[in-house]
Length: 242
Length: 218
Image (cartoon, rainbow over the protein chains, first blue to last red):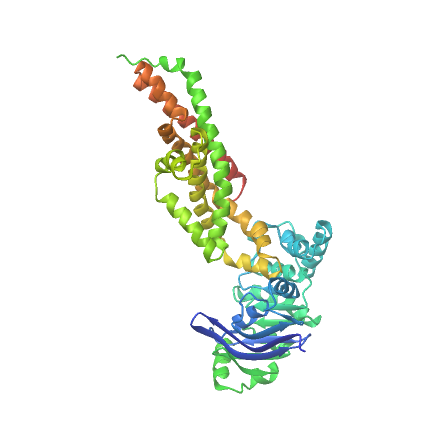
């Protein structure tokens, strides 16, 4: 069985059908880039993986765990699937070091000193060695997003989910976040990324999925389909992105 | 009758005794009210339909009736309907608990729900159970937003204790009335009573300002 498996899943918000009978398999080590017009269901698809949105039909299995198997299983899935949000969502009352150390302490039961040591190593990794004692409000957007990546990595996930991680950032700040993501991809991290950064998709993406009206319209190698879109809607979309 | 301000000082010991009763009812009542309010507020914000409906009914019943009527119920109606007899002091404390609890519930609910939903999602996404997210992430942020409206409620509850004059609790207002009934010094006595209330509410305000200053409102 694949690492992440969408089996005929649907998702509706009340009368609004967002995802319709989607089948999708993702293997470990893949870097899947999700694109599509707004309202096409790409963020929802991503948020179904860690159960932030509960699917309303079908089954979704992550590393052998079904999202339907109850709260405890859902928490196990979430520990395996780290998430990075468009709006960073750092905890404002905690320093960056505390932000990163919280997950391991509360979820993995790591002792405070050990959790903070690991948190410092992760801050080093994302290039923020000297920002551990700063509060999120004292950092730039790019720095905050890198802390958010470190926070997600701290729980030692097997897959990282990125929900438009650079959309809220100025062009020059985007690159510092993308660099961290590129590095992660090169280290072999499994990633599912909702983004409009086509250069990222070309550089490290192993698959590109174009979504339209709650369905997967295109699922192929990024380098091939970005240059020659197989579908007129996707061609139109890409012309607006690049 | 000539106004003689010096007469105020003769009744200081009596007024202090009355103020002590007022403080006693307020402190006990608010401790209970906070506990009840936090539970009821969190239930309103996060529980299922049935608990929510019970909670909503409680809050609307209390907010929709005057506190004097509520204490009358506790003191005069409960003995008749349910054969539960309580002394005036317990009825007074209980009235503050139940009354403040309803208002504090709405304050707590509002504060928790005002915290950006993305933070809850971020906590859940790292695998924390919902109660941990509320305890470690949303709670501390909501607490900072609770303080100003909570301070307001503390002052309202303290002044509401004056209404328990109707069931004969010997708090500050009742003490003032008793002194007045003996010497008819309305101006001096009611001025002294008002000053006593101002000292108590003023102390509360200063204490709450200090707490507020110590923490940034995020």
